[in-house]
Image (tube, rainbow, N blue to C red):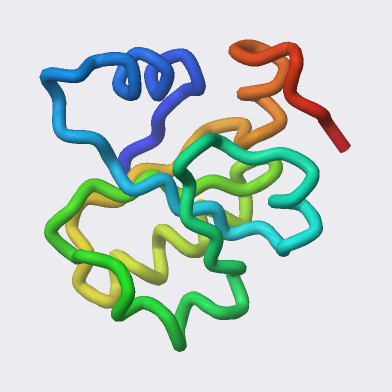
Length: 107
């Protein structure tokens, strides 16, 4: 599993010449409603085993949670299931709010 800082993700998302990743948000619905990255896909951690078929194992997937722990667990699960392009967002959505988008609510 690769790890990406929020700064690196911001550069990736801004680069229109680079294929864009799936932004997989694994937090709970209330957390997602509080704040999330535009275009992200919400599949709470507990639902991943039942919904993993909604994801393309060939596409880059950036796993996102509050601070990076749950997303790392989901990333490891997906890798064991055969997904090859898994990236964990270091620091999670909280780091994004602190370092990239100061207008984003935090909790």
